[in-house]
Structures are given as C-alpha cells and as structure tokens.
Amino acid sequence: MLPTPAYAAASATSPLAPWSLDRREPGPHEVLIDIAWCGVCHSDIHQARGEWKGSIFPMVPGHEIVGTIARVGEKVEKWKTGDVVGVGVFVDSCRTCPACHAGDEQYCEYGMSETYNSYEREADHIKLDRLRPTYGGYSTRITVDENYVLRIPAGLPLERVAPLLCAGVTTYSPLRHWNVKAGDEVAIVGLGGLGHMGVKFARAFGAKVTVLSHSANKREDALRLGAHDFVATSEGGALKGNANRFDFILDTISAPHDYNAYLSLLRRNGTMVVVGIPTDPTPVAAGALIRNRRRLAGSGIGGIRETQEMLDFCAAHGIAADVEVIRIEQVNTAWERMLKSDVRYRFVIDIMSLR
Ligand code: NAP
Ligand code: ZN
Ligand code: ZN
Image 1 (cartoon, rainbow, N blue to C red):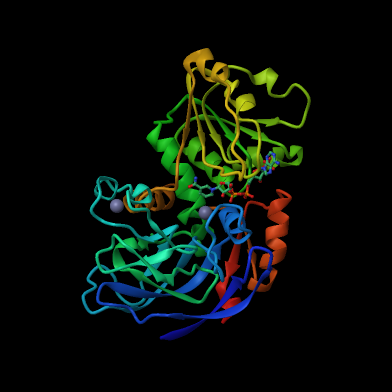
Image 2: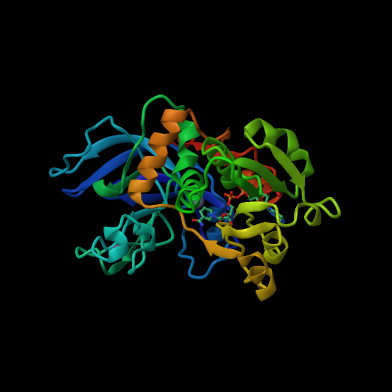
C-alpha cells in the first residue's frame, strides 16, 4: 500500500480537511500517477455537500487530474515512466456493453466507475466492489487502469490543461454531437468553468457566440474569451429581446433556474442542451418545446476516445482553460467563491502544496 496525502470531506456538512488514504501498487494493467494539478469542478461541491443522492464519505474530490506516470504494471505497453497523462471523470466501466463498445463509456449500461464518490470494479469489470471506494485528485497520486488514462499533448501549460479533463470535454462533446458549425448562432449560458470552455470551442468551430450571464460584470471577459455578444440576463427584458434567436444553446448553470425562459430563445429546429446539474427538477412547458419544433437534451462529459480527440484539438488550436492556481489550503475558500459565481474561470490546485 502507498500512503497518500489528500484532502477529504468527512461528511456533507464538513469542510475539506487533510486526510491520508492508501493507493494500491499498480496491478499488471495499471499505472501509478504522481498528480501535479487538479482542477476544481462544481460537481465536486455538489457531491461533497450531498446535493446529489448517494454520496460516499469520506470523499476525496477531484476529476480533472494531470500528472506524470511514476510506475507501470508489468503488462502495460501503452505508457512508460515519465509520460505526462490525465485522468478525467471516470476510471473504469464494464468494457462490454454497446455504450462502452461505441466509446461512450460515460453511458456504460452498468454505470461508470467515477474517479471519486464511486467504487472500483471486480475482476469482471461489471460488478462494483463496494469495499473499495474511489478517491479523486485532491491527493498526491492515483492508481488507474491503463485504458482510462489520457495522453497530454506537448505545448500547453499543464495547469491550464487539467480543466480540459472535465470542463473541456463536457462542452466539446455536445457541440460536436449536435454538429455546431460555422455561422450557427450559439448561446453559452453561465460563464464559469464549463461556460468559458464552451465559448472557446464554439468560437473555434466557427459559430457566432453569445454569452448569457447573470453576472453583468463578465461582459469584457466574455468578449476576450471569444464571444461576439453578451447578454446580461439580470437586466429586465434581456431574454425577451433575444427570443427565437439561437440555433443551439448550451446551459451550464449550476443552480436551479427556469429552462422555459431559455427555450424561448431557440429559433425553429433549435436545440438546447443542459450540462449543468442543479439539485432540483425543473418543470418544462410543452408549449416552450412545440413552438419552433424545439429540442431539449442533456449531455454527460465524453468517452475516452473523444476526450483524447478534444485534448489533441486543444493542442492544435492553442486552447486551454483560464485558471487561478491555488494551494490546497485555499480550496474551501475557492468553493465559497464558486458558489458566488466568482471564479475566473477555473480554480486549479497545485498538488505540490499537498506534498
Ligand atoms: P461554475 O464554474 O461554478 O459555473 C457555474 C456558472 O453558472 C456560474 O459561473 C454562473 O455564471 C452560473 N450561475 C450560478 N448560479 C446561478 C444562478 N443562481 N442563476 C443563474 N446563473 C447562475 O460551475 P462548473 O464547474 O462550470 O459546473 C457547472 C454545472 O455543470 C454544475 O452543475 C456541474 O455539476 C455541472 N457539470 C456537469 C457535467 C456533465 O457531464 N453534464 C460535467 C461537469 C460539470 P454567470 O456568472 O455567468 O451567470
Ligand atoms: Zn467535473
Ligand atoms: Zn459498459
């Protein structure tokens, strides 16, 4: 066993505090990664505070991991010591169901093993091993199956790459799946970690990008990040003035809000995709969908293949997250700031501060 410093939440009402966990020596098909950077996702807060069902404590959050391979199992051929790699939101899946075969491991019919707040799998990769919870990247190292590791292309600053492992692929995937292309009118709703990556990707795909934000003071940043237009949703009449305008809306808001108000902004045959996961369900009016033959859909992260494609796209186009680097002791304050929408635009933990 490998004693590993970490930060954990002991319960849904405890702040994160120093903790130690045991990582395992890599098995034949596993690698041990020394973690250098870990991004802070709003999903870390939702789960550590028990806002989604089934939280497992103690919880070590973190699923935007970048680091270096420290050791490889005897049968590993893909990786060698010193390789710079990433781990995203999941570390295993069944490997046999149609979703896994299609490279959509995040939709595995048996459920993915998430990087934290989940369980490792038994040898068949189908059943969960409920005696072995998973622990995430707010820690100095992690042992992962070689097939659930991403290659980090050279050329981008690693602290700005870490957020791509969740915020990046979660916005890249729906824009690709719904074929957002040059000339499309695209709205990105909510300018946080996910939203700011959505702006960069939609712009790179040639769309006309508008940010819809309830923080009027983010206008300049939105334009600097690549948006063509900015709508301050807190200003009276702002949504009405943009009715029937967009081909595609990506909704990244983390808090409960009225989907119908945003659906009304879709033009004929337009699609709104929710990626934000507020705690409470939201009623949707049939009329809001029927008018203009609108579609409402959801999307979850991306599979391994697509995450690698996204990382390579970012390297080729010089795209990375805008980050504020913090030490691990600052993580509770960072969470409070995120809850006030005060993040520009992703906190990333320097894991050196845990060593
Ligand atoms: P974040 O950095 O905190 O950004 C969320 C943004 O939502 C805020 O910056 C703010 O943008 C907006 N917002 C917050 N409260 C609001 C309110 N009361 N009314 C209107 N807008 C509000 O969070 P994130 O890490 O990007 O994550 C966003 C959501 O996506 C979370 O729910 C997270 O769990 C979820 N998520 C889903 C997936 C997936 O696979 N589907 C993956 C990762 C994360 P403005 O200040 O611009 O209004
Ligand atoms: Zn995330
Ligand atoms: Zn599967």
